[in-house]
Length: 308
Ligand SMILES: *[C@@H]1O[C@H](CO)[C@@H](O)[C@H](O)[C@H]1NC(C)=O
Ligand SMILES: *[C@@H]1O[C@H](CO)[C@@H](O)[C@H](O)[C@H]1NC(C)=O
Ligand SMILES: *[C@@H]1O[C@H](CO)[C@@H](O)[C@H](O)[C@H]1NC(C)=O
Image (cartoon, rainbow, N blue to C red):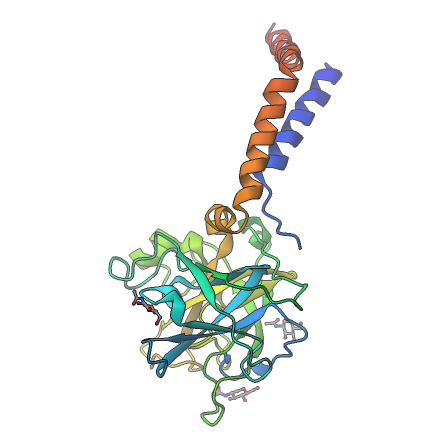
């Protein structure tokens, strides 16, 4: 009996190791404070030009999650040309060297026409042409729904969006902390059909009345417990107030990376995933067929015993 329990536990451990390998090695926020790029070397400023003339552009924020991959929001990539994206570490002020993008992968669920409010799959991965040689620390992806069982988390948000101060050009990154909630009733206006159908993908900032992420913070990280849980997605007014950053009554929402972890891992760790799968199933079946049979027999025997 005890031997079979140990074997059963071993099987569970082996299976789990291969399923849950989601630990990667490793806004200007309106009315926030300037962040130090040295403290968050993996935060990226994205300048996304509309046309090859390279004049007008929009800005987003991203994070380096692996040597060659940047995580951002799908609405930053949507209908954009990957050749017209300039990536800067920290900001163009901190580090003017431009890095280019060779591949852009937007989550297949992202569809602003089908879901104009309550976007799904608002997450995108950019693959760099060249690595940043000096960056050794990547954004560590993590977090799961169970972390919110005891309530809200105090998280840190970083971005290159608009500040309250109109004179800042928006080229220094800003940082803020706030409480974050998760669950079917966590966001304001959770009773709407859109939120009811997609709340599992959202992390909701508790409106604090003075600092909020804003346009340009999109794609920026939400860091809780030392790991990146979210990607800045969208916001709306839940009162009848103005749809303005920093105004009270504003609900800001981040995409919960946990909801898209399989999709993300397939892009940023494709080889590792494939190898792992092959190795595990191969080893398990090829090397231990007799072992498997013995285990199954012992298990069956025990089940029968308990039924008798
Ligand atoms: C993207 O930009 C490049 C560089 O300017 C250009 O050659 C290419 O045609 C553009 N692609 C599309 C789909 O617009
Ligand atoms: C979150 O933690 C920071 C310190 O890390 C603290 O200054 C801030 O007040 C906390 N925020 C909330 C909403 O508790
Ligand atoms: C910005 O934050 C300060 C507190 O740090 C607050 O007094 C001020 O009202 C805020 N500004 C706006 C426009 O919300």
